[in-house]
Image (cartoon, rainbow, N blue to C red; front, top):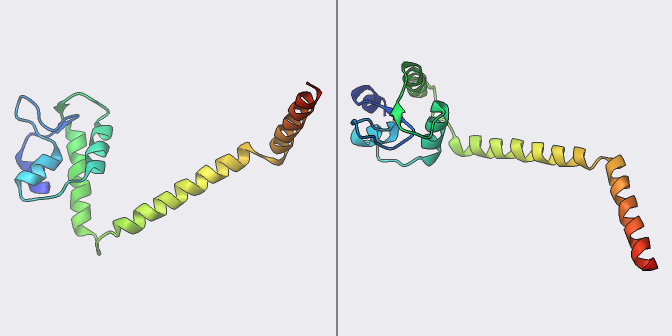
Length: 125
């Protein structure tokens, strides 16, 4: 991908544009990278903050090349499966915490009281 990014006009917000610009994934493909990583494409477009095709800024290209170079210098390959599992565990735990906070003991007693009231009203009806 690094060779492709350095060799082609890179765009954000689309796969290709009418001026010859291409996304980093296509640039990687044209330079021998045979992978499809949709999450990268989405993150790249999100970094650019656009849904329309445009040339990547110098800042965006600098971020991309710096990250690619850093990944090549890493002492050991990243264990993506472990990172994804850790992320899911953290976000799942956060969702549980939020749900528990919403149903605090006071809140649960309010809900229980409302249900009891409804049951009494139904019985009277």
